[in-house]
Image 1 (cartoon, helix red, strand yellow):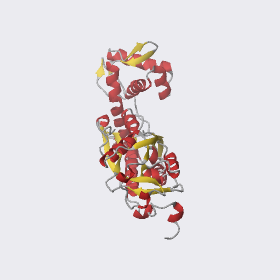
Image 2 (spheres, one colour):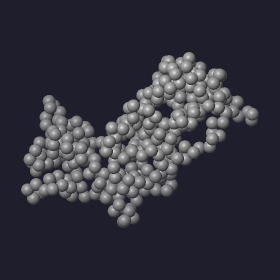
Image 3 (spheres, rainbow, N blue to C red):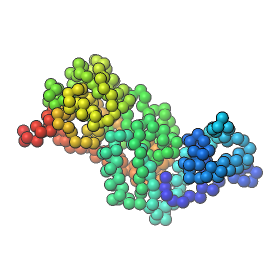
Length: 345
């Protein structure tokens, strides 16, 4: 995480025969082998040579007196002992980065790197604003970003492939990635995102101030990502019908294109609708106020002690809260085409 040099050779455990049992660098090697599934892949990920990784593994096995990896055909896999070390590697790395960050603050150093993963509709909305905020207020922080759906982003935090996951969940989501799969991680709700109906402008429900989902029981529906599709089924089920899903795409622009041609109806989060200009022939109608998804941040426990991570989390919280509190007039003219919405009526 932080770009501060850390003495990774420092022992982080008891000693064996007067020598350190293992150090943080070796834990990172074991974790990399677990992620890559091979010595060569771990070497590539860490920027080491393959012989250097093999040598570190052999030295570690000699000191511990137990095998860390075992051959399976042409590949390798971790033994039970190796899996124990890999499981603790993320917590050790987070603790060391936190210590490095706190020391950096004491020394007045500001150079740091934060890895962020976020869901697709955050990419053109929240993330650019976050980058601009950090560049303006904390120019020493370098933010890297990878787009990922919530389950993959949560797993990346656990595997130490990202520092912060920006995720979402829907009410009643039976596969909520913030449940058992996030056990042991720090999960914080930072805001909500309103859900909106996306209808052809000529649809009878397009002029409503609030969408009655039951009025769309006979419509063809366009479903999105697996989590959004699950929520659509749950939403329509509460309205007393099973939606007739004619099309499935997680491309938000494609959703609006299909709706503009009168091919179907859909629901989208407000962030997704904000991510591109509305197409002619599309009407946006708010769902009831209770129909919202929750936005979360997920980190390793204790990650907020790393100053750069703490600053980034705070900035994310402010940005999400700001989007949540956007002006009520933003959707004025929701039941009209863009041309009608600008005619002064």
